[in-house]
Structures are given as C-alpha cells and as structure tokens.
Image (cartoon, rainbow, N blue to C red; front, side, top):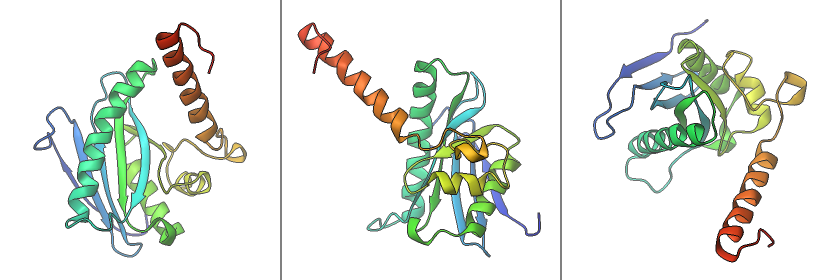
Length: 181
C-alpha cells in the first residue's frame, strides 16, 4: 500500500441499532478523515455515495459527519430495496473541504473502501465528481459513477433528474388523475 491507514471497525453503533459495521479511517499524509457506515448487506453489498464536507458551523464536525453517515446509510438500505437492487445500504462521509481534496486523499479513500473487500460499493455524492470517482477507482475495485472512458455511466445527475421527473408525474397522477404537469 505504501503507507499505513489508521482504521477502527466497530458495531453495532450506539444510537443506530441495526448498523452492521462502521469504519472510521485516517491517513495523516493525505489528510483523509472518513466515516463509512454499512447499514445492511442482507440483499447484497452495501451501496451508497460518498460525500465530502467540512461541516462548517458545527460544534463537532466529526460527530456531524458520523451522524450523516449513519442516517444516510439507513436511508440507502430502503432506497436500494425499493429500487429492486440486490444491494444493502451504506454511506461514506469524508471530513474536509470539497475544494481542497487531493489525488492523495482520494487514493487513500479508495484504499479504505478496497480494504472492505466488496462489502461497500461507493459512488459520488455531494462534493464528489465523476473525475473524483475515476481517481478513487485507481485504488479501488468498488467505485461506481465513473466516466464512460473508465467504464462508468458518467454524471448520475441526469438519471437522478429522470427519477425526480417520474416521481412528480406519479404524484400528479395520484392527486389529479393525470400525469400531465
């Protein structure tokens, strides 16, 4: 690997029963501080995005990152099940400035995800771009949301927009008897 990653594996997580695993990792040379929460792998490997935030304004940024990872990983379990995917729910939160992330930080994060052996499949979320996912994928086989040149579908925002549009149409049909907006 080239450098040591400090990791801690704990669970079930106090206050969020039902989480199978919570991983915290730090890599001092790159500045990586991350929390990965795996809520469930009952349907398959946990799938969920990675976000990066400094949690400015929070009295305890580390606690805020942990709470986000726990809450969002649980939501991903339900989201993936409702979508009919063979995946459980997971979420990762990198504590840091999205504008200051480096290749070293993204590589270190990829190594943390890789160390989970496929229990968690990561994708982009707030502050993480398709280009970032390509970099993460250089050290991790479990990175989705990569560019078409790297075997991915590219920006998931388009697919998200289609899903939101269909949700709006379904709501309109339920309320007014027609999907017309």
